[in-house]
Image (cartoon, rainbow, N blue to C red; front, side, top):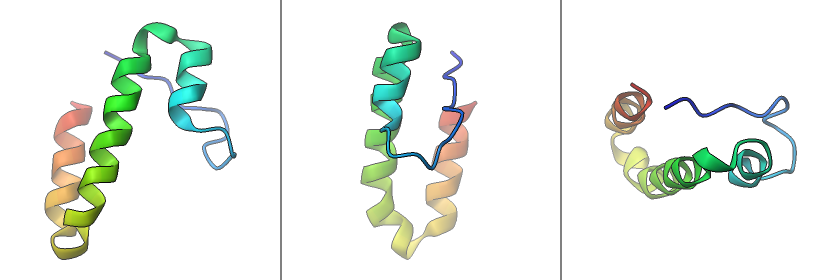
Length: 60
């Protein structure tokens, strides 16, 4: 499944809301990705490489 990136990722529009507006079918995947990032940030403080590896495996 491909989830499109917003044209200006540094804008104030939240990513999942942008996906909902542009491709509603992929909105659950976008929200899941954001939840994974949020929960992984705590782990990333101690093991940043593991966090990046986890995110890379989700992207495949």
